[in-house]
Amino acid sequence: MKNKKIIDYTYQQKREMIESGQHLASFAFDEDSNVRFVVAKYTKDKEIIELLSKDKNEAVRYMIALMSDNETLLSQMANDSSSFVRTAVAQSTKDTALLDYLAKDENVSVRTCVAGNSHTSYKAQAKLAFDSDVFVRVELARNTCYENLLSQLADDTYKSVRNRVAEQTNNPVTLHKLMTDKEEYVSAVARFRLSLLLEKTHSRNIKER
Image 1: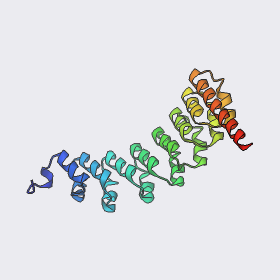
Image 2: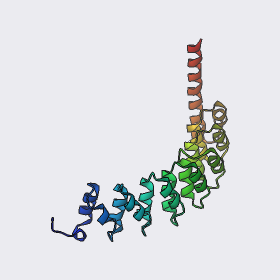
Image 3: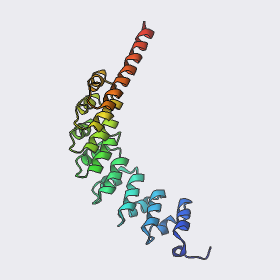
Image 4: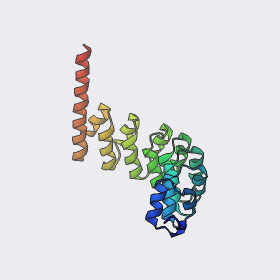
């Protein structure tokens, strides 16, 4: 096997070598995009990362963006022609300015990933709270820590959004409003969480006396 050329190895053999850190520079040029995808997942080499960030295969570029913490590179990839790649950028970046930019993306999946990123600014979250797509609003309700946005989303026409608000909010006013929701699950969760919240408040008040 030692005399075999790189090209003669099977995909599984190449994968095992890549995972152990062997021949990454060579495999970055492999004609099989599946092999390059594995390289993109495991490499830490800056030159290989730069090379594969421009790979012709979107799955390879996606993996580079998903694994990257290089904000300069992610900023460049935020303009990738593939929305699949841009979703990875939206998941990986911690740059609030870049997230503000991606919050305006035409693709729903990209905006949904922005809504789920904990580094997304209040400004971008406030914009996404009015997003036309329900999946974006559901993800925002699941992740935001801003009670005023949760209060707004509690009036959403989609029950899936209100479900998330009932599970996320710690505001008794919002929970009280959701207790009368026409959807049984929403109202039940709101009642349960409000009772827990009041119980904790009561216990805290007793301890402070």
